[in-house]
Length: 252
Image (cartoon, rainbow, N blue to C red; front, side, top):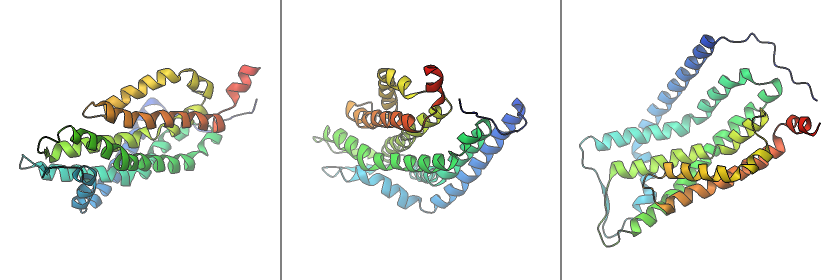
């Protein structure tokens, strides 16, 4: 069996781990704040861009309105925050990796660049999928149920719907990366993942329900189907790049 040694570092105490976590979270907060201020200057354009998939499917003179005086300001703030999450995502992922890396083996730390690149790409891809596919399909179907009426959608409700789907799908698209990391540290194997595929589908259905603000079946299906494909993709990646030692040990 191949030898796997950790780097000769002094073990950190529990309080030192907490201090390290505090430091990483503080850096993440600063990075998010800088990204937020940058996005705030473009919040109007960001909000218009985000509302476009729903606005183009409004019918019979329907419109997006607000009913509270502070609603536009709050939604502009949330739009800037949403943009900041995507802009700062590479740095946030870097801090997450930097926190867990000291507990990994030297060979596993080499995955850092791949983790940052693939993690960022998948998070953005998840948001893009939600914007281009999930939100338009769900909005079109939901609005079609009210064709006999005039739509008067509140700004807050529309933005909340899209924000949950965008961020949720961004996180969900990280599933292959999470599976790869778990397989590299020996927590799961491809065989284990496929044996529990049915259980995974149940969890995916529950996650899709949580990510669906309206709870309708169409939106749940649009969100759940990519999750199943991502799970299977993660199994394939785990088989290609996961740890082989467990397989060797069991064969022995």
